[in-house]
Image 1 (cartoon, one colour):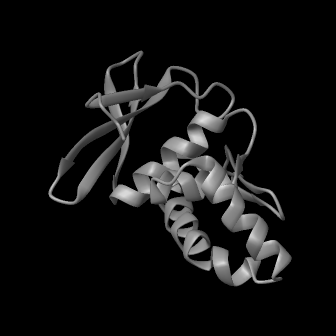
Image 2: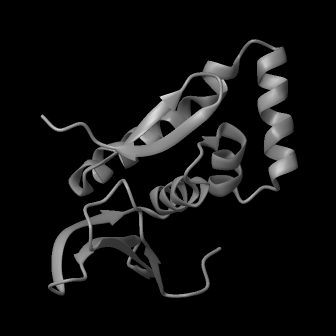
Length: 140
């Protein structure tokens, strides 16, 4: 669980120079605010409202940088289960050949995050069989 109200994330190579993400972890109703700020001119660049689970996914993806966030880490983040327990769930689903079905709710949540993070010029890349990685969105 998050204990500080504002969490600031510098994402060199992913965000433009002088930009940072600021997450307000104090909920407003059932929502959390993610904001991109240009620190050079003290200007708000973009803002999105995240659900609690979207917030946990976003934090997990950012904290995994520059690497990827495994399925186990994401499951642990959204279920509040220990990583070892999430690892066991994924392993059992793999052995039973039901990993796709077991991860479907997680994939839907990541898809919602992906859509919201695109406002900040970010994307979430799927790494088949491993997890997800936060990357810079492609320019159109």
